[in-house]
Length: 383
Ligand code: GDP
Ligand code: MN
Image (cartoon, rainbow, N blue to C red; front, side):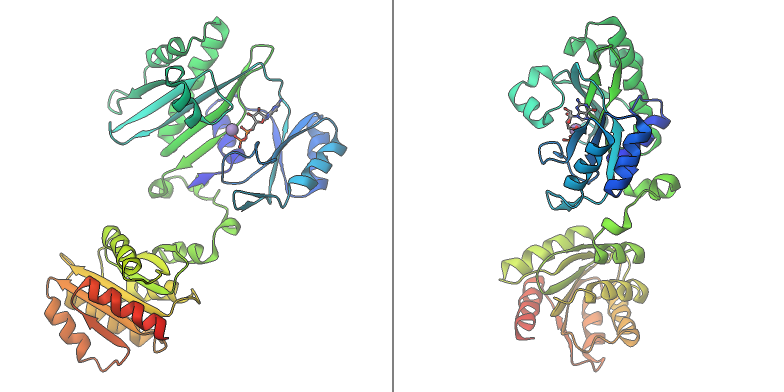
């Protein structure tokens, strides 16, 4: 789950990382009031879950409350990379002498977290990595040893931060960022830019904070930060139902058991000339409850014309899935949809037998993924 800048900064603040004071605003009037309270000049910042807001006109300085109101008027409703601005963060403006970059993320290859620091912050970090890789210091932290202050020192010396006071402040921020990263079960904590003011104060001017969805159950406060209104309503419904679902723009609804198989199914449907309506993973089970939930989610998409179950029985047996599908159809009216069911693996014959004798004319059992995909595409086009 990605957090908005203002939410990431709230977490930064809790861990003692210096940030500027600010207020949330959703209207130009609120922006004006915030600027008054903060004693303008302020910076008016679009809160959207995408980067590059500055370049897109979503970050503007305002010298007075009147100007803050006008800038808020400009930015609210702006479309930034497909994200419409509905919230603003009004922050007391900072004077900037230098812009650094600091992040901690996972290096899955190394199975360790990875710090990155450069004094060439403010811009796209990918650009720095490409154009001047030597300017980017990288350092892994072994999860068992944990973070040690010498690691921050090594980073600081590597990028040539030589002012003593700056060194001290960056050292403290690196340690706090690591704590925030670990204690929040984050996948990414990024500060770009980490600024140095003309007075020599080091502060986080931006925040990118991503928390592992699978750990949200132990961070109720972070889980509450989710912006339900900004989410796609279908994906929000799926999340509510506990279904792993991604909406695509075709007409063949897809259910697989297992993420890998579901993804392959999306590919195979496209391969035979069809257009997948979604990616949906039933997971390990095949019980009626899970099937009902998944079908409810998939059929909320009005573009869906046919449904393709692609099941490979391993530990989950095909006969159990077949019964689960039939039970689900008792509870849901699916008579308007042709349903292709490909069963393979453990007890596949038995499963197909069960479906064949169920007396449901809209069920089409198939033995292979390719045949199943062809049939589902055909039926979608005929519907
Ligand atoms: P991003 O474009 O989405 O990464 O948004 P940032 O929060 O990083 O802001 C973009 C740029 O706006 C920064 O790199 C700064 O140069 C500038 N900026 C943001 N806040 C301030 C501020 O308080 N004062 C000044 N002078 N510039 C700011
Ligand atoms: Mn930034």
